[in-house]
View 1: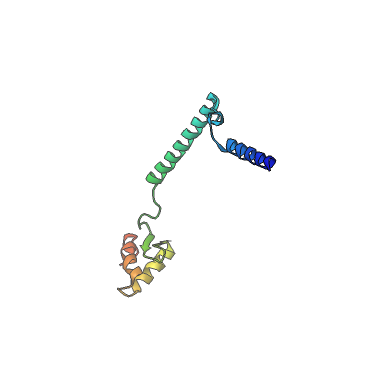
View 2: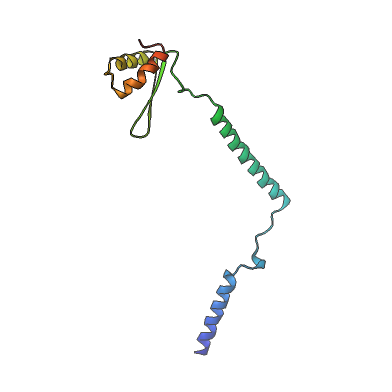
Length: 122
């Protein structure tokens, strides 16, 4: 019985010693070279994200407005919104259809002003 108790206390003591975090288990310090590498990687990430943000803020939107024979119409949809973008003969056909639609048609109501801006409506 004494032998079993001794073994149990030894196991508990060993487990406690392995799980306690003391000063002898501190993380190793980074060398100056590794610090420079991490700093360079951090700077590269910050510059990359900054460039991406600048591009997103300053890039032109190809679907910004109607004009030059192209029609862009945004209408409410079940997923939040839908964009119709047509150029050339497809734009003419779209505008013809929307001007022939009833006056209360939600797509036609939004499409007619855009067709006029593109020079495709009456």
